[in-house]
Each structure stands twice: as C-alpha cells, then as structure tokens.
Length: 75
Image 1 (cartoon, rainbow, N blue to C red):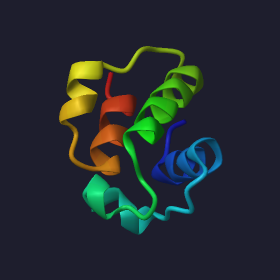
Image 2: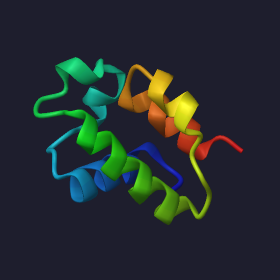
Image 3: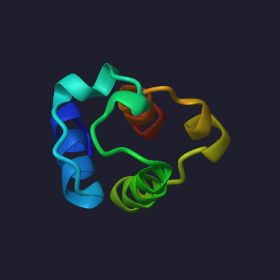
Image 4: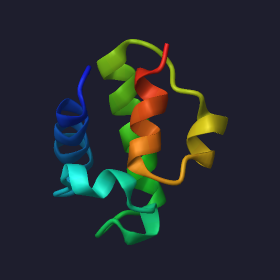
C-alpha cells in the first residue's frame, strides 16, 4: 500500500465501510458506521498489507483516517 487511493480501497474492502478520500480528514465520530472494532480490523489489514507493525499507542491518538494512513506509511 503506497497511495491514498490504495488506503481508501483497503479500508473499504477490509473494514466494509464505503469511504472515499474525502473521509480521510474527517474525525472518526463523523465517519458513517465507524466504531472501535473497525480500527482493530484496519490495524490488522494494514500490518498484513505493509508487512510491518503499526504503533498502537500512536494509532489510538490518531484523530482521523488520514492520520492512520500517515502512520502506516511512515518509515
């Protein structure tokens, strides 16, 4: 996963929510259908996709999907 579009597709496919790139800077509480279980599902999908762990403390402080994306792709 290298691009925002790939991230959006991953979230849509793995989490099952019909998000778009416009949702990336929206707070989780404003993403239609979002709940904390989706975050756990997303973490597992990101780690599988990138082949590396995502910092759970950093992830829990991320206020948006865009922040999660940046955490997942940062070296």
